[in-house]
Image (cartoon, rainbow, N blue to C red; front, top):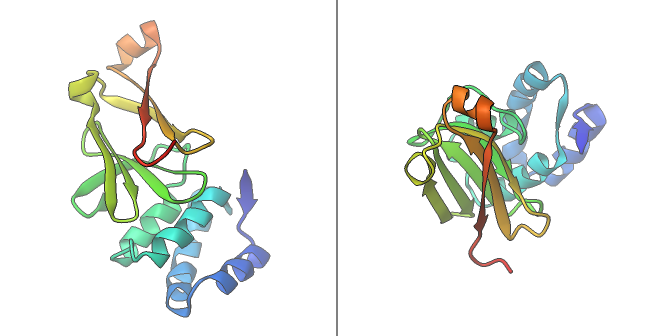
Length: 168
């Protein structure tokens, strides 16, 4: 579900966030408007609140990264610690974040805990991830990807389903 990030929405977000994070929000809001024409995902905003509360964001760039890399979009490479991120997706309840980074690897984090790490180029021979989505109950992660473009055009994408620890 898309949500217009207008002044009314920003006011509502401002009521939920601690004062120290409002400055960061105002700085990133301008960049967010330029990137996505005032549109972002409600689940990204919900997850942003969760990760800020748990001090997941160590630097202002980390905060900017998650706001600018909402689900269902493949983006340019950004630095996030030692990882070069190309894609990020959030669970429906905002408790988990899935990252596609560093070649063709995926990570799933719950708070500070890493609950999944998979090297897809070794496991499946993939060099591209098309999408990552959590199941409605957040118990599984569906990852769609492919090998090189010519092969992908001929036979389509493949999908993997990971069962996530602590769910179901």
